[in-house]
Length: 205
Image (cartoon, rainbow, N blue to C red; front, side):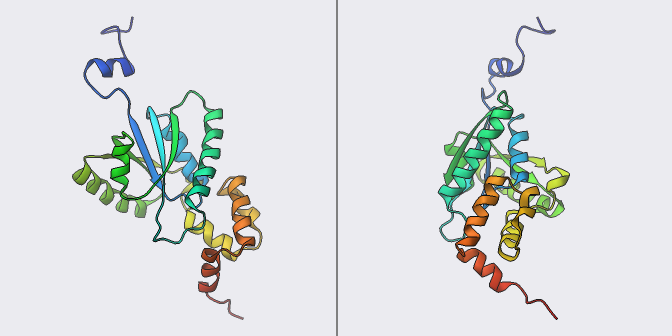
């Protein structure tokens, strides 16, 4: 018997009236998902009882991958995480539209999970966290990105895809499944990539 009583951990939380399950929502566009995103998901699974990866659907925003494509990729990559670490928390992947706080409440979550790469991220995320707590009563948990992912972003991945010739260099930033998807979008001359290509400054010389 543990010192001080017969119950610890989640059982003790139930006895004192705390929530039985801590459900967190990790929202993002994941366009595309990166190794940095997966690092946050993997570590979040060790903290919460359940993690919901919320893939944002925004009809007014140009996106490289459709919501269905992004959900499919995230589900496949999360399934691999679960196979490698089966005892960590379960993960659901869902597309959503509208306000993140509304989706979080509908998912039964009490907390938002966010990844922080640098000071610029922190300033923005603190402001968002304060707003979400004030408006919806949702707390925010921050996970600091691993050093290898501090300057990786989905927008950078899209730029490299549009302007680069050898996409194998993306292997350090995104999983092979995502590289395959990026190669397909590039071969299709996707409008998002074409726009980035057209907007790039011409090389001098």
